[in-house]
Amino acid sequence: MAERAHEARLAALAEYSTDAVVLVDGAGLVQWTSPSTREVLGYQAEALLGSRVRDLLSSEDLADWQALVERVRNAPGVPMVGKYRCRHEDGSWRSVEGVVRNLLDEPRVGAILITFHDITDRETAEADQRNRDARYRRLVTEAHDIIMETDEEGYLQWVNPAGLRVMGFTADQVINRRFTEFIREDYRPAIFNHYIRQIERREPSSYIEIPVVAADGRDLWLGQNAWLTFEDGRYRGFQAVARDITDRMRLEEQLLQAQKMEAVGRLAGGIAHDFNNLLAAIRGNAELLLHLTSRDPAVMAELEEIVRSADRAASLTRQLLAFSRKQVVEPVAIDLNGVVTRAEPMMRRLAGANVELVLALAPSLPHVMADRAQVEQMLLNLVSNARDAVSGGGRISLSTVNVVLVAGRAETSRTGLPPGSYLCLDVADTGEGMDAATQARIFEPFFTTKEPGRGTGLGLATVYGLVRQMGGAITVSSRPGRGTTFKLYLPAVDAARDPDPGA
Image 1 (cartoon, rainbow, N blue to C red):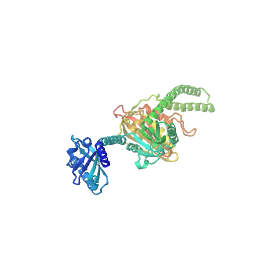
Image 2 (image 1 turned 45 degrees about the horizontal axis):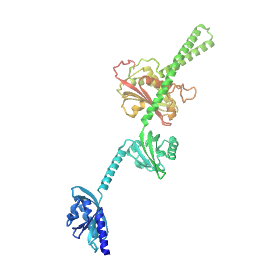
Image 3 (image 1 turned 30 degrees about the horizontal axis):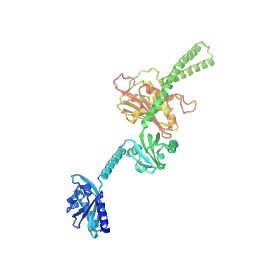
Image 4 (image 1 turned 45 degrees about the vertical axis):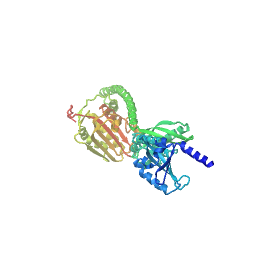
């Protein structure tokens, strides 16, 4: 009685199981299937009797199935698992997980027991997840923005290809290094404190603009959004998306500089006009006194010194007017190489015997619209400035080249000029160079790093004003101990347009 009750319970379990239970004999023929086979495989139990399980499987899975059966035959009682595609009665294919166990020697069973579990939905979900993961991985790896991840101590765990490309490093050079190591040293404390505050306040995200140093030593600015990760209340690191905003920062700096210089220029121009009127009165009265006074040598000397001082002051006002773009000029098409060549003897005398002056002038350049005297003044001012930078001996190089500025390029952004053809005049020296703070002020009138009595601080301000008046731009690149290079960009014009016979 107890035995029959036990068998009844087993039969009920097989009947109500959501898995298909199949018994096959030693020859591999189906001897019995559970009623749930209908739900899993789509066949009535009786329809499968005497058939082979392999006939239900995809041809691609037959080799794996046969290998599993062989292993099961050689290991009685040991369950083994495999995944297969099984043809449903309605013609569709289902993914099933089969658990196979050799119970041929078990007297109460005497068959190979196979349990099929329908994993179609799970397989579909896993495939969908894999597809989503692949899409996200493709988005991350092919994105132009920098994407990175750190652990709780700030060590980089992953950086996408764009980040490596922008920074110029390989993955081996950045992984397991602290993120702060790549930040410009003078900014590290501020950036570190920013993220410490974000962690302490449990702020999920933040935006900050960070200066970093690329592999080749260039300074780059990144606009970075960072998202913190917390697990069980504990900080676990952050994920960040950053964009190279170096060009934008440079343009903003140029705009601020241009606005400042425009304001200073208006002030300088107004002062220069009023000062010229005063100088005219001073000089005129001094010359009148020279004619009216006695021939007392002492008095004559004092009056002549007044006239000379007024002339020197008038020269300063002319430079101020040039800087403020209020000086009247008559631009014509000139040959820039010709102006440089004719000014070479004067520049060599100005540079001095212990300074090497090298010219590298590109042939067949287009002309520029400019005032020849102003171009000569710019050359002398720049050479004079370079000479002071290499006072202990060195080299000053002047070169000309035709440049085409293209929209979106770094050089175009740096100049702030519209795209087009320009002549570029480079004046480079091997002198002491300048730090960033000095470079930010070198075009300001009366700013000078020279000791009192050695300069007015108007030389570079005058060059800035003149080149802007010609529709061009001037840039500077310098580092302490590595010299300085000024680049003057002047719009190119057709050589036949009002040529200057003296140019």
